[in-house]
Length: 392
Image (cartoon, rainbow, N blue to C red; front, side, top):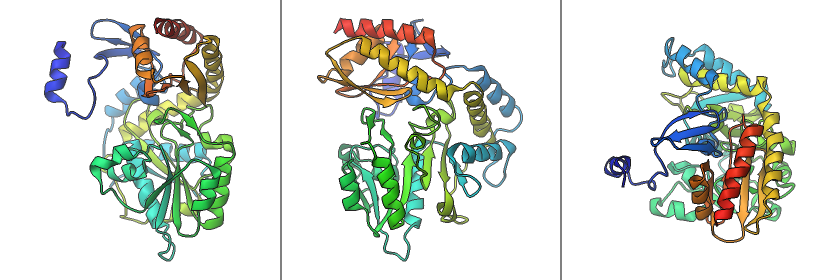
């Protein structure tokens, strides 16, 4: 092993596999390791680095804010916090009745949403929470209870109760939702499952059923939100309005921040003292997120994600590889379905050719480049991924 691998083994908790490389710097859509090897980053830190690496707007925002006011606790408000809350109400469509809770990660946002669901108990008869099989909502205990992957939960059981997992079909929705359900949790696209799309009409029917039965429709847009799928949020492509949406990842462009945004009557469920976070919404993180969202808006990067996603699909189709059987997802969150369980080998081959993609599971490759990706980066992806395919 190399020196950094020895240090990693000796000091880091054994919750993750050995890292693929030791990265030391980045710029735009590229990163470099400690040996000077260049990689085209088409994973973006798992859909986090929406503006790529070392973007001047992020550098300026962090430098300015940390020199002014970095943290004040939740006993105080700051201008960046209020600006970001108002911006998120506008971008989500939550409007004047919307409310925003800030935290530090996607898992924390889902924990806040889980507690929100518990508050929708009605007269005490709403005791069930529904989530989907093969979903992923985080690794903290509440988020883990929502996650529809039994192998992730088994070692930590008993997890918080009351959660039921159902098939991702409209029929399963119709059979499960009634007046005993407090909330339905959904990923509009199942990112960790390999970028799996929900069936056509699923979100529309979910909205109808939740409205009919007084169920909160809570959408986990931690991976799909902030322009990633070619709209600010994936639910906007279905033309629906949720009761709550969670977000994180791309909102901070690399700094840790998450949020729960509520809509309409759901905004009245939480009362003072029922939830909180020491670091949530501090000025350093919210100022950075404001800078990220300003760049995305002013430079039209949501539209760029939609256009470049179509171009990326065309490039992948042009490989005519028998290994690739389908392309899932939308915008710049794509999943390649493979004809055989070769995802780990393909991702490793890509890395050998200077390209970072992800084996989401044995038969799926996940691709999520920065929203700033352009012609040059797509051409380089075509060359490097083509070499990886040919090597197999």
